[in-house]
Image (cartoon, rainbow, N blue to C red; front, side, top):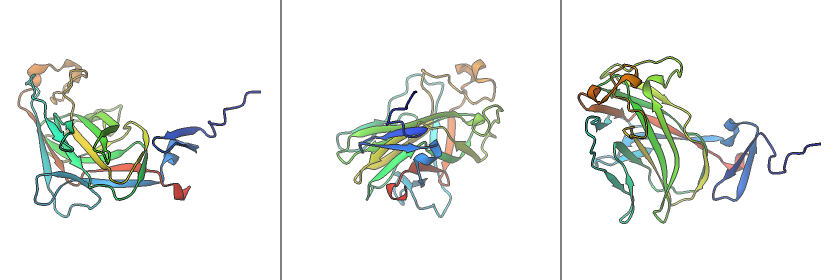
Amino acid sequence: MYHKPELLKDKVNVQMMDTNEWLHVPDLDKTYNKKLKLYFSKGGNTNKLVLTEERPKTEDFAKLIVDFKSRDDKQTYYKTSPKDSLNSTNTLVFETDVLKEDIIISGSYEAKLKAAINKKDMDITMYLVQVKPDNSLFYLSDYLGRASYAEDREKRKLLKPNKIETIPVTNSMFVSKKIPKGSRLIMLLGVNKSSAYQLNYGTGKDVSDETVADANEPLEIKFYNSSFVEIPIFEKAKF
């Protein structure tokens, strides 16, 4: 008679990085018991973009411009410490304050993005990164999704140019890891322009039929500060 290894105590068995512990639950929704809701906002009177638990009181936005006609983008970098930086090309960088207590991220983050663009479609990228207390970097999770299929994967719904739309983000990469106090979280929010993937020029045509000749004017995106991400958190005390 076949017996499962002791390690496989339930249907979902997750090794929580940096804890030397496993989590055994019946389904993926049980890998977390709380969500950390963070808004994509601005840091007061500064130009810094922040991830904050406080809902912004007034509407504002951060603008991103991506020129698909250009094939020689100058790489841009975001300094996370005097010696370290992140490649931030074609993204906006949002950062939390230093965490005051340990947390365990466990699951796939979800988001609702409020955005207005001057075209009919875009391919959104999101990268969640941990800046450790020693300023070293750890890539936690990422997402790549086509805005026109965000609501329904089977039916395309184009965006209306220059209208504020709500774009849901689901199915980001699963991660389970302890994030110690003293760390910061960074979200790189942007648009895909990597030659490793099909490029979406935003005309509304079948993307497979688009070429660089369809690029026309640069893509302009306004990401509004009512946009938020929900990061799944596992709290041991509740299990």
